[in-house]
Length: 222
Image 1 (cartoon, rainbow, N blue to C red):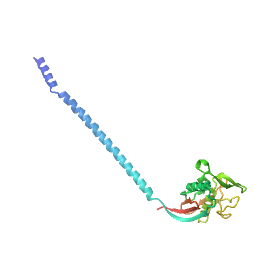
Image 2: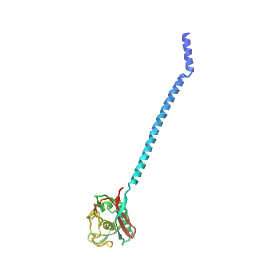
Image 3: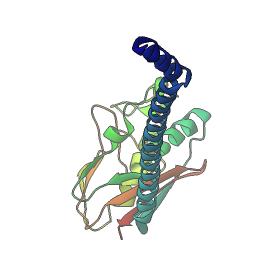
Image 4: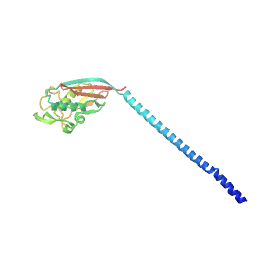
């Protein structure tokens, strides 16, 4: 009798589904924990993204906020006499490279270091140049010396600018008086000056087809 009673009790227990209910509760608990974990991780990620966006916006704003003002120190222009397409093109490339160059206080500026060597890979074309004997020939970058000459005349009278290297051309040039020019040739002749003013300066250069114009401004940080 006792054995039959235990058997019947066990059958009733299994039919009641208690074991299945317990398993279901455990699975649901695991599911809830998993979802909570995902929610926590997602929230953390969203907060990080929000923080990054805020920081990025803040940095952009700060950069705009501290953008320096400019105060004109000097401006000089030279007339373009040789208006061949090749020379005009060389003037445009050189001005684009020189434009917005900043020379920090106490720094020495080197024209040939900034402009580099005139090569066809950079877009330079052959135009008239002088050789060392003053003879006219064709060479890549013809016209570059007009930019260096214009820059020289723009900076030479600025108080605190010290010219450290300048060379006359081997022949006269139509855009500047003798002694007011600055011949350059990568690897040999350079035009250099030291910014001994009390501030950083910025160079603006443009060629408009008729003139080369160089403006030198003082940078004011606020």
